[in-house]
Amino acid sequence: MPEPKLLLLHGALGSAAQLAPLADGLAISYTVINRDFPGHGGTAIPPEGYRMSGLVADLEEWMDQNFTGPVLAFGYSMGGYAATVLACRRPDLFTRIITLGTKWDWTPASAAREAGMLEVDKIEEKVPALAQLIARRHAPQDWKAVVRATIPLLTALGADPLIDGQGIARLEVPVDILWGSADRMVSREESEAMANRMPRGRFFVLDGIRHPFEQIDPRVLHPFFN
Image 1 (cartoon, helix red, strand yellow):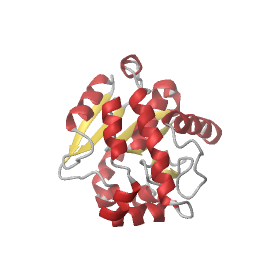
Image 2 (cartoon, helix red, strand yellow):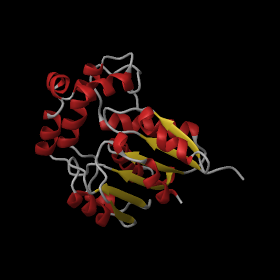
Image 3 (cartoon, helix red, strand yellow):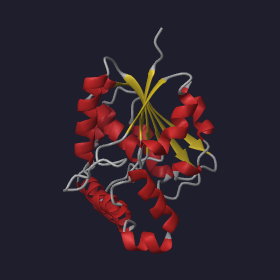
Image 4 (tube, helix red, strand yellow):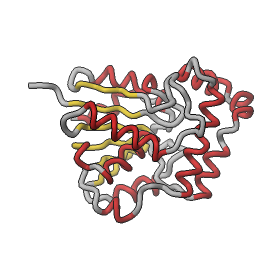
């Protein structure tokens, strides 16, 4: 009997390498597909920057071409949002979605706050370790170009989150929303509220877990894949 398929979707400023430790730990139970979004992981950055609508459209086309049936998807941060947007449109592509550290509350104000954190000069000066990490993830692309290209993604979500109340209320796919109690980028309130809006949504708290995936022991996530 073939192993079930698991699709991993990384976060903003991230790449498939970000989720490699999780992929390695689950390979015994799943056929794991750990995929870069377009313009990430060293691939060419779109001249107009990233847009969630474009990332979701690319994901839909790619899944139609590569899968013959629905799959389990794990999305970290932006990856969880992309999977949910697509599931509202194409529930036939997913058996279940697990999200971690996904931001659900998108408004012009929240998008502006997030975009304000992406000033490359400040990152380079105040958080050089993050600058180096982004550079490694996206080589040979310029890490500053990756950061700047992410700003349109955020501002576009602020203008149009792509998820509306009616779409969520009709979502047939089970969605497990995981939130770390030490996450300073995503609130419990927005995560729990989104789970409650979904017919088959469930909300889970991971004690002491912060937002950066690199600081998470992937073994704490394994029970959610059983």
